[in-house]
Image (cartoon, rainbow, N blue to C red; front, side):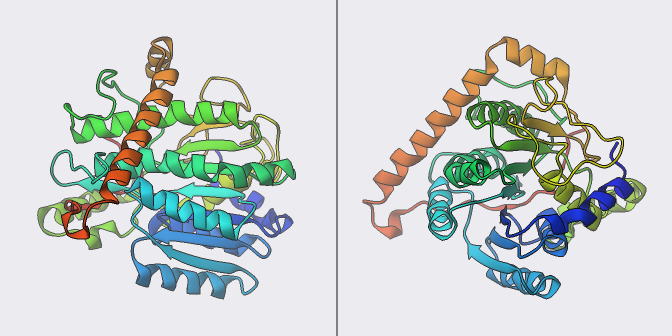
Length: 362
C-alpha cells in the first residue's frame, strides 16, 4: 500500500513540473474534477482541458481551477463522449490547440437502467463510454503524447474503471450483442482494457498506461438519480461509510499516479521521484516497469492473475485488438452513412444515468 502520507509527501514536489497539459475526459465532477484540482494545486502553469456534457458544471470547474492557480489555463469543451465521432471531433480540436499532451485522464462512465442500449453507431452506450471511446481517445491523442515523450517529458494515460474486477467473458461475443448483462458489461470492459493498454504500451514505449480502480468513492452521484435507484445508492453510502474513500483523497492518489516515477513507461522514469520505500510497480504482464499497470485504490499493482493468464493463453490480446478495430470501423461506416441522411432521421440516444466510478460487481 502507498500510504496517503507518502502520496502527499511526493505530491508536494509537484512544483518540479512546469507547463504540463492534461486532458480530463469526464472531468465535470467526482474523481476527474478532484484530480484536476490537485493538478492545479501542485504544478506550475498547468493547462487543463475538461471534457463533458454539462456546460454549466464545466465552466464552474474551470473557474475554480483558475482560482486555485492563477497562472494556470483551464478550458471546457462540451461533448457527449459516448459517440466515436464526437471523440474524433474533440481530438482534432485538441491536436490543433496543443502539440504536446502530458496526461490523458479518463473517468467518464454510464450505468444503463435497462439492458443493452445502442448508440447510432451500433455500440452499447455503457460499453462505449467505459471502453471503446476511451481507447479511441488514447489512439487519437497518441501523437501529442509521444511528442511529450520525445522531449523526455511526462507522457501518461490513466483510465479509471475497475482494475482487479476481471471476470469470465464471452470470446464469441465481445461486444455483448447477444449476451448483455451489467455484470458481463463490467467484466468485458475491464478485461479488454487490461489487454488493450498492454498492447498500447508495447506499441508506444515512451508513454505509460494505467487502468485504475479508485475504491468506492462518494462523488455525489446519488443526487443525479431518482426513485429507488437513488435510495439504494444512498443506503450503500450510509452502510459503507467507514470504507468509502474521500473524493479529495482519490484526487490526490490519482495525481500521484499521473506524476510519480514508480509508474514509468517502458522507456524509463519521468516525473516526481517515488517516496522512500516505494519501488517501481509491476506491470499487467508481470514485468516490473512494463509501462502498463493495473492499479488498486492504494496505488499498488492489482489484477486477477488467474483470469488474465487464462485469457492470455487463449490469445486474448490479439482478439481484443482485432475486435476493437472492427468496432471502430463499424462506427465509421455508420457515421458516413448517417451523414447523408436528414437530421430528422437520426437515431436518438436511450435513457441512461451516470455510473459510480470504481463500481465492482458483487
